[in-house]
Length: 147
Ligand code: AMP
Image 1 (cartoon, rainbow, N blue to C red):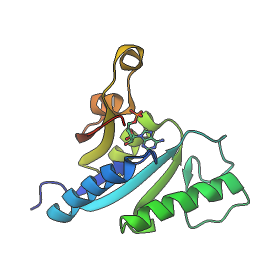
Image 2: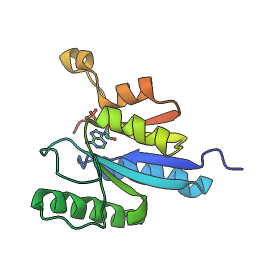
Image 3: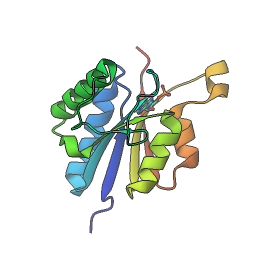
């Protein structure tokens, strides 16, 4: 039996997010694990969907910002050869949504990027820190070099 069966990679589209996701994919391929991709929408107003805060990629809306976000996630997933059915677009707070989806989907490894932080940024905490504290499964924090 493989060590991990379901890996979730959280992507924020920052410069190094493809690198983080590629690392998650390499682990998933090696372990023959399922790989899911999540982007949490925290930069647009709460979209009006009939399905709560989960935004389904295959349901077309007349909300252009939302359609743009769907296209962005699909393109990111295409580059990593992740099927759209394994992609999640959820409106909310990244820290909470990453941990919650991992629990709901029986994820056993979460992969996130992690910046070296100092001073106030360290005090305020990062997504990686919060996920590490609250997740019930293993977490891999991929160190991002601030370029
Ligand atoms: P941060 O330290 O908060 O800048 O983010 C570190 C990592 O958290 C990123 O590399 C992602 O893996 C994850 N993350 C941050 N924001 C989001 C988001 N909106 N959706 C999905 N993952 C995110």
